Length: 120
Image (cartoon, rainbow, N blue to C red):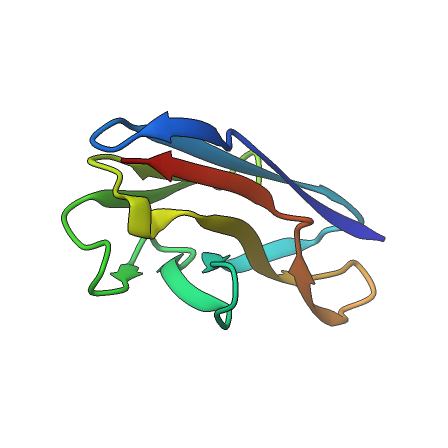
């Protein structure tokens, strides 16, 4: 069993910052690419940012220059620093990871989501 547990969401005003965290736990041999997705009310889930095992990052155009993804590979944890937040960033944010288990099974794992609300 592998879990991803997000934290750090909340209610902020436009222009403020939040830092999301996502910790992995369970039967893990290796965590590969980690990512953050978000889903706004009435919209499809969209990719926000990804980070590979060697630290290569990729961002959605809408968050470039404002959000930063990082990871602590020793702790199998990924972070999302969100600055200059806008009301359009309001969504439930989900952590995602590719995991290799000790039985050499590849899993795609999702967290339960953490809500971010940005007021104008």
